[in-house]
Amino acid sequence: MPCCLSGWRTCLRRPRGRLEFGNRQGTLRLVARFENGSTELTKLKSQSMGTAVMALTYDSNNSLEITWHKVSFATAELGETDGIVTVSVECLPMWDETNGIVSAVAKCNVDGICQ
Image (cartoon, rainbow, N blue to C red; front, top):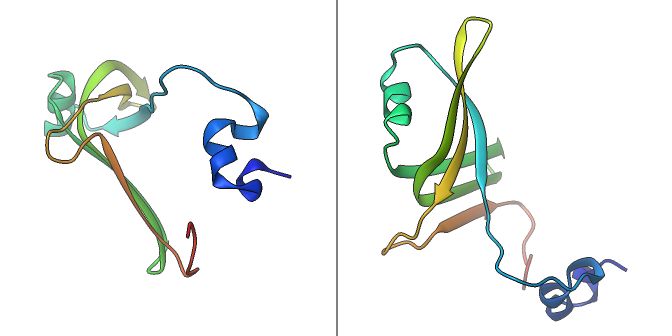
């Protein structure tokens, strides 16, 4: 039986029967395409700090939005694909005094999940 069906206390301590030690860290990696010379590319190359938002939407009743409130770029590697500038980015999440590190809002048609 999967651990999430056998009780949340077991899941938090031993995911799938593994006993894990140490601190965990979430990461955000992405590849973006830019027009050469664009404002967005300039900001990325200058290592500007900001907020990263990822949104996935199926329809008006099913969506997920994850917000990293304060990130900087650990790495940003420029590339090129079919004449378009691409950048492979690894974001470094940082603590935001007001909002913490990350927040997520999930919306679906099923009531009573995680209760």
